[in-house]
Length: 319
Image (cartoon, rainbow, N blue to C red; front, side):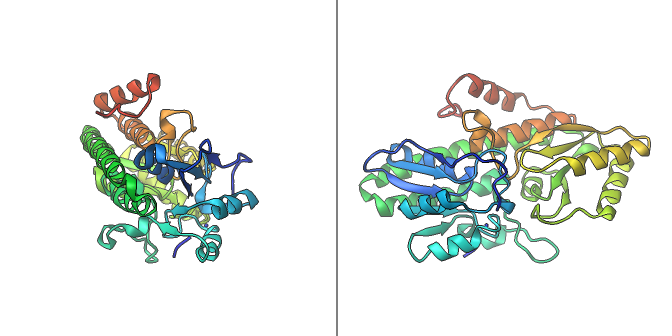
């Protein structure tokens, strides 16, 4: 079992209002918690351990987290070492609770690895690939509440259809970026699945985990790439400090090329809980729009979906 990270703020876990007869679920990250809520509907109460702006690679579980796990019926985590320092805790508590690694349910041939053969854990960056966790979620919920099996399956199918639609709109949008500008540079290497899925070249300053340090040579190589390709924009991440991005901007300026920050992307954490970006579909819609527009492409259909959800509940907005 892969299971680990340090909370960036002092906020408590995001917990749905408790109600009797609901399946009590703990999910480590928002990209899982949101889909569990969609599949489980009114039959689940979800505790999300890591909220907006929290880096799962560095997260360390606290006493409240452990109690939430002990009080739960089921625990979902990503796996492949995304949760870093929390792995040992989940491993230990796995003897007492059903603990399910959802990324580990996906086909091995879909996984990417770095040069050290470490599996890239950021699978949700490929929307079509991430739909593969819906069936395992529904399966685990059906095991606990078989009387609601048909509803869980229906919800899973409907969510999957909406995600596939978003995936296709994303592919279309990225392809409107001028070909020589389809280069995405971010704070750490969280977007390789995004690059493979949507046809854009991807570079991260740090490695797969934010625990890795950015070397001076890596900074210099990326500055050379930015200036040689005349890249217009690079991107910060909501859960990673921007100092390394600032170093790239300063380096490019020193070589006579101005590169701007194209926007903030959601990599390892979603947006604020009350916002559209605080949902999985919302964070990916935001990322696709931000990258497309900053690099010179067009994302009208995606922007329409985003605008709809600024004023309405995101449920049903993709129908």
